[in-house]
Image (cartoon, rainbow, N blue to C red; front, side, top):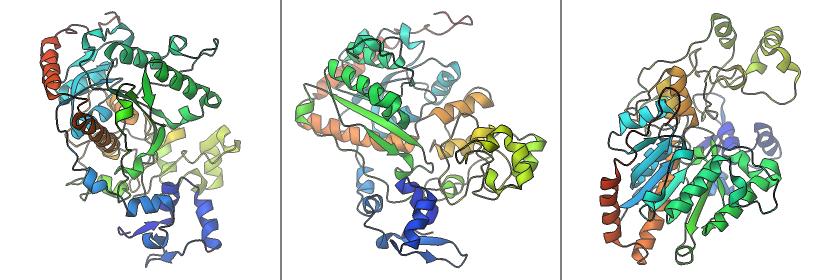
Amino acid sequence: MNHNSISINNFADLLGVSRATVETWIRNNKYPVHTDMHGKRFFLLEEVDSVPEIRAMLTSKWNDEKKITPNFTYTSAELFAGGGGLALGMEKAGFHHLFLNEFDHNACETLRKNRPLWNVIEADIHEVDFTPYHGKIDFLSGGFPCQAFSYAGKRLGFEETRGTLFFELARAVKEIRPKVFLGENVRGLFEHDNGRTLQTIKNVIAELGYTLIEPRVLRALQYDVPQKRERLILIAIRNDIAPHVNFKWPEVSTSLRTLRDAFYSGELYDTDVPWSAGQQYPESKQKVMALVPEGGDWRDLPEDIAREYMKGSYHLGGGKTGMARRLALDEPSLTLTCAPAQKQTERCHPLETRPLTIREYARIQTFPDDWDFCGNLSAQYKQIGNAVPVNLAWAIGRSLIRLFNDMASSGLIKPNDQISNIRHYTKLHGIFEGMVCDKEGEY
C-alpha cells in the first residue's frame, strides 16, 4: 500500500467499524474498491474522502504541528508515571519535568536509568505532600488507574472520591494549582456505571475550579502509532485562565502506521528492530500457533484443535479474536497488554511463531530504541503494555505547548516566573530524597 491508498482492514480500523460492515458497504457500492496484483483489495484515499477520518488525514496540518516548540520554559509534573511513555512524549513536546511520582520500583528504575536528572519520587501517592510545589508547576498530568467509585452519597464530588486514585490526582491539583492538568484513562471510563463515573470526575474538576475541555477518546493509530490503542483524554484549564485561551486538539497524522513501520527501517525508525529478549511459547502452544496464518486467530484452526485449545471458551459468545491471534505485518497491532503470551490476549509475531519481544513491544508503543526497561521480562512487558504511546503523548503535548504559548503571548505567563520555578526546583530537588520503599513497603 502507498500513501494514496488504504487496505480494507485498515479502513475498518480507522473508522472503528467491523470488517463485515465495510464488506457490506462494498457490496452496496458505497465506495469503489480496487485490487492489486496480489489479490489484496484497497480504497484510494481520494475516492473515500467523504469519510471524516479520511478527510482529516488528507487535510491535516500534522507536519506543521510537529514544528511547535515552547516559547518559554513550561514546568510540568507527572503522577502514575509508569515506564515513562507519557512523560517522554511531553518532554519531547518541550515540557520541563520538575518531578515524576511512581510506586512501582522497576518503573522508577527505568525512569532513573534513562533520565538520571529527572526527579523521580518513588512513593505511594497517598504519602506524597504536593504543597511544596504550590504555584510552581504549569502543567500536571497523570494516567490514574480506574478504580470502582462509590455512589453512597448524593453530591458525587471531591470528598466522595476518597479511596480512589483519581482522588489523589484531584488532591495534587488542589495542592499544586497548575494552570492546566491532564488525566488519561481507558475509553471504557466513558460508559463506566452508565456514565456516572465520568460525571463524578466532571463534578470534581468543576469543584476544584477548573474548566474541562469536552473529553475525547483518541485512537493512537491516528497519531503515528502502529497500534489500535484508544485512550480517554481529560484536559482541564484553571478558571482564571480558561476564558482567555482556546485549546485545540492535535491534528491527525497523514499516514496510518503498521507493524511493518514498527519492525523495519522506514519513516518511523531508521533501522530494523534490534534483537532483544522475549517470552517463549511452550511446545504444545507453539504447535497450535504455527497453524494460524498471518492476521488469523483461533477460527483458522482445525475444529478439533480449536476445541481442545479453547476449552470452555469455545462455546461462549463473542468473537474472542484475541485468542490464538497472529498479528498482520501490514496492519496496526491490536492493543498491547501486559503479557504477550496469555491465551485470551495473544500477540503472536506476524511471520515467526513466537510472542513479540521487548523491543518489538516498545516500538509498537513508539518508544525510542535507546529507552531501556528495568526488571525481569514480566516487569518490562508490564511497563510497556501500560504505557501511553510516546507519539500519542507527543501529539497531545504539542497542542498543550501551543496552548501555553498562547497564554504567554496573552500575558498569562511571565518568563521571570518560569525561571524562578526552575530555581525553586533546584532547591527543592532533595526534598523527597530517601523517600523510597523499603523491603517491608514502609516509608
